[in-house]
Length: 88
Image (cartoon, rainbow, N blue to C red; front, side, top):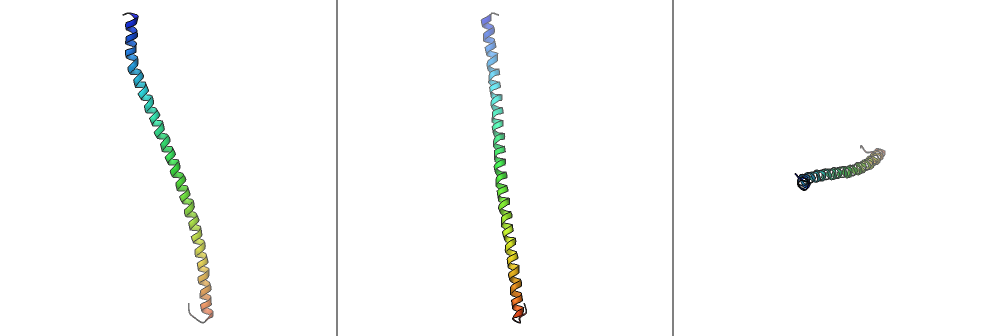
Protein backbone atom coordinates (compact mmCIF):
# COMPACT_ATOMS: atom_id res chain seq x y z
CA UNK A 1 0.00 0.00 0.00
CA UNK A 2 1.33 3.36 -0.89
CA UNK A 3 1.05 6.59 1.10
CA UNK A 4 -1.90 7.92 -0.93
CA UNK A 5 -3.91 4.76 -0.24
CA UNK A 6 -3.09 4.96 3.49
CA UNK A 7 -4.17 8.58 3.59
CA UNK A 8 -7.45 7.78 1.83
CA UNK A 9 -8.18 4.88 4.22
CA UNK A 10 -7.33 7.03 7.22
CA UNK A 11 -9.73 9.71 5.97
CA UNK A 12 -12.48 7.11 5.47
CA UNK A 13 -12.01 5.79 9.01
CA UNK A 14 -11.60 9.22 10.61
CA UNK A 15 -14.74 10.75 9.07
CA UNK A 16 -17.26 8.43 10.80
CA UNK A 17 -15.32 8.69 14.05
CA UNK A 18 -15.39 12.48 13.89
CA UNK A 19 -19.12 12.38 13.14
CA UNK A 20 -19.74 10.08 16.09
CA UNK A 21 -17.66 12.30 18.36
CA UNK A 22 -19.58 15.39 17.22
CA UNK A 23 -22.93 13.67 17.84
CA UNK A 24 -21.81 12.55 21.29
CA UNK A 25 -20.58 16.06 22.10
CA UNK A 26 -23.87 17.58 20.94
CA UNK A 27 -25.78 15.08 23.08
CA UNK A 28 -23.75 16.17 26.09
CA UNK A 29 -24.40 19.82 25.32
CA UNK A 30 -28.14 19.15 24.99
CA UNK A 31 -28.10 17.32 28.30
CA UNK A 32 -26.32 20.21 30.00
CA UNK A 33 -28.88 22.63 28.54
CA UNK A 34 -31.78 20.48 29.78
CA UNK A 35 -30.24 20.26 33.24
CA UNK A 36 -29.70 24.03 33.34
CA UNK A 37 -33.32 24.57 32.31
CA UNK A 38 -34.49 22.19 35.04
CA UNK A 39 -32.44 24.01 37.68
CA UNK A 40 -33.72 27.38 36.49
CA UNK A 41 -37.30 26.13 36.56
CA UNK A 42 -36.83 24.66 40.03
CA UNK A 43 -35.33 27.93 41.28
CA UNK A 44 -38.21 29.93 39.81
CA UNK A 45 -40.77 27.58 41.37
CA UNK A 46 -39.02 27.79 44.74
CA UNK A 47 -39.07 31.59 44.67
CA UNK A 48 -42.76 31.60 43.77
CA UNK A 49 -43.59 29.18 46.58
CA UNK A 50 -41.61 31.20 49.12
CA UNK A 51 -43.42 34.38 48.07
CA UNK A 52 -46.78 32.62 48.32
CA UNK A 53 -45.91 31.25 51.77
CA UNK A 54 -44.83 34.70 52.99
CA UNK A 55 -48.09 36.21 51.74
CA UNK A 56 -50.12 33.47 53.43
CA UNK A 57 -48.27 34.05 56.71
CA UNK A 58 -48.96 37.79 56.50
CA UNK A 59 -52.64 37.14 55.73
CA UNK A 60 -52.86 34.78 58.70
CA UNK A 61 -51.31 37.36 61.02
CA UNK A 62 -53.84 39.97 59.85
CA UNK A 63 -56.71 37.53 60.37
CA UNK A 64 -55.52 36.65 63.87
CA UNK A 65 -55.26 40.34 64.76
CA UNK A 66 -58.78 40.89 63.41
CA UNK A 67 -60.09 37.99 65.53
CA UNK A 68 -58.57 39.56 68.65
CA UNK A 69 -60.22 42.91 67.86
CA UNK A 70 -63.58 41.22 67.29
CA UNK A 71 -63.32 39.21 70.51
CA UNK A 72 -62.68 42.43 72.44
CA UNK A 73 -65.69 44.03 70.73
CA UNK A 74 -67.89 41.06 71.66
CA UNK A 75 -66.73 41.26 75.29
CA UNK A 76 -67.44 45.00 75.34
CA UNK A 77 -70.92 44.54 73.91
CA UNK A 78 -71.73 41.73 76.36
CA UNK A 79 -70.69 43.95 79.24
CA UNK A 80 -72.83 46.76 77.86
CA UNK A 81 -75.84 44.42 77.54
CA UNK A 82 -75.38 43.32 81.15
CA UNK A 83 -75.07 46.91 82.33
CA UNK A 84 -78.37 47.69 80.61
CA UNK A 85 -80.03 44.81 82.42
CA UNK A 86 -80.08 42.29 79.60
CA UNK A 87 -78.95 38.71 79.42
CA UNK A 88 -76.24 38.15 76.78
